[in-house]
Length: 225
Image 1 (cartoon, rainbow, N blue to C red):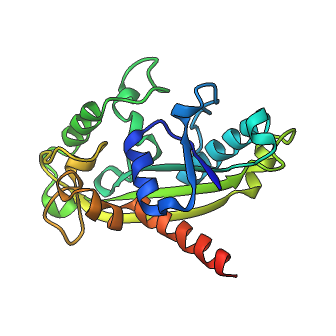
Image 2 (image 1 turned 120 degrees about the vertical axis):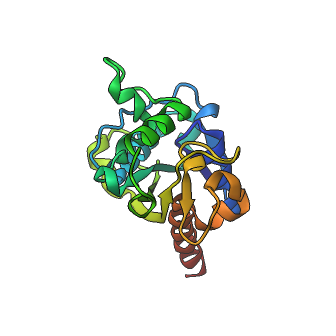
């Protein structure tokens, strides 16, 4: 069974492969350079994940290589919610720093710039008020039957799974692993950042891991039935 991951992020793709294992043969957007990339303009993680999955599934249904053998599409949207910032950056996590620049609102920001802005906004906020969480929603949809159907209508076929990981924001970055806000996020029950804990631990407790584990459990129960 083919699973197309709606991402070009190699770190994310490896994390997904590690959790779902060899159940699928995998492709990513790196393998499909002509695939469309929808604007992530939904107000929720679920809305963005479903839009990405449905848009890619509809495009795949129009490609000869996928007409005879439909594929499943997996898309996710995730981000950091900081309580002291009223839930920001939220759905804007990847482009948090770019929001400050004129004409840059649609572009993702470098990780270092996002982390610098987060620390700047939290300057002076004490440890007990630096609570935060990573939240992720993954959407799974088959490309079968997508051709000719409007994306908004076809999106109703998507199944979604949510995961979150509670923690706090450190006062300075630590660790060289991971990506995004990992060097600043210390998950609940640990005294090291995601960037220090290593992939094996992160793949058990992260927000994306928990969402993917729900998906994996769903697939396993269906295969047994």
